[in-house]
Image 1 (tube, rainbow, N blue to C red):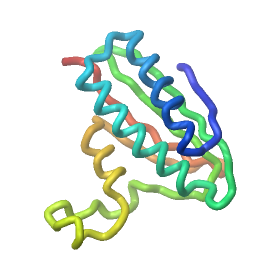
Image 2: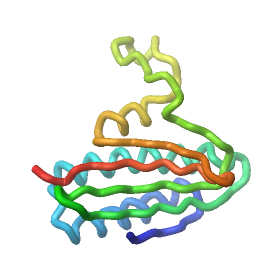
Image 3: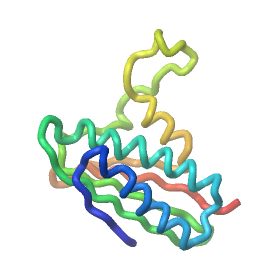
Image 4: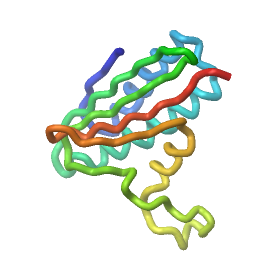
Length: 137
């Protein structure tokens, strides 16, 4: 497992995505999966940056583990912001037009659909959201 801790700000997004890419490239992650993981990670990290500590600032830790048979990546996002379980929210109705849909929730919905697994828990004041993706073709 490797991890990075950054200020939970959107200007740190490239650093977070580079960190994840470096871990996945070590294992020869197929580009298709790398792109899906990057999209999911971006959506989750940006939500943390925008909402976890607002209007204050705090830190976000991203942990990346790759291993197992079949090969799987697990990326965990940790923050000490306001307790919030994005998985408890109702999925947006994507059959509606953009104008008719309620605002919010689309990023988490995309992450849920791109990943093989996603989970949330709150522990000792820490939000812990984990995404998993099998890397086998």
